[in-house]
Image 1 (tube, one colour):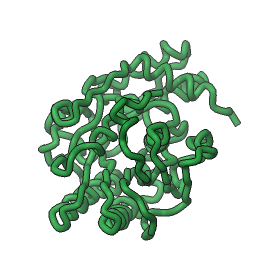
Image 2 (spheres, rainbow, N blue to C red):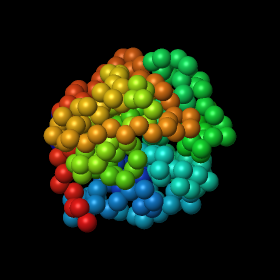
Image 3 (tube, rainbow, N blue to C red):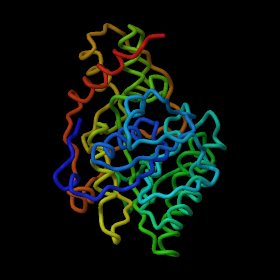
Length: 324
């Protein structure tokens, strides 16, 4: 657990809302905010998240949980909003693609409207998926992307692109304090075991002694950021002055092939599982790595956790989950 810095400890307590706060990253943000002495309102409809991520916070006097779908307006009083609500893995966001688009677009309109009324600072968790299957490598924030607007991933990719549009239009039209973070692949404790992401897939399969499903030949790459580092980056962006809006890439620039990841998971779990190769999903990017120059220069942030250490903590988490 990351301890609050001296600066964080001396900040005046705020009332902070985290939409999607029962999710993987959102629950870690909620926990960190409580450690810093803030009041936290988590808003979630539990479409792709679980209360299990928050049960250890239920008795905290500054914690509040509200079941709500952000595609409907919400009337509360807050000082800051971390807007993370949206299913973020292909299994969940493709299950109801129309609702996924609504969550990104209507949800952003509703949260921006709330932020405008309450004069709250608001941060959008956008995604590296706005770059699509990139033709520029590594990806810099000024790259406009290579996205299929009518594919099976479009509900998420284009939904997030439209959410970014809304954030910057609200900024231009109302001079609102908005922040946009483009999140790259993140992993760690509290990932859903059935979310279909490569890290959770490999770990769950390895622990069960099942074959590891490798899409393609394993040469495609990703860059994996441990969740504690991601939370540091998001909170650093939220703390920036009014003139800093982003978008800013937040992720780990160290690139790994899927084959390298599989071999490391097998080593750390001691599993003898074999690899099974399946066709690549439609529009699945073949390379993904962030350029984090802006994050380093503007936020003073860079990831610290090494993949081996982060994977071990994630494996320990999954190994301790109830099997029923």
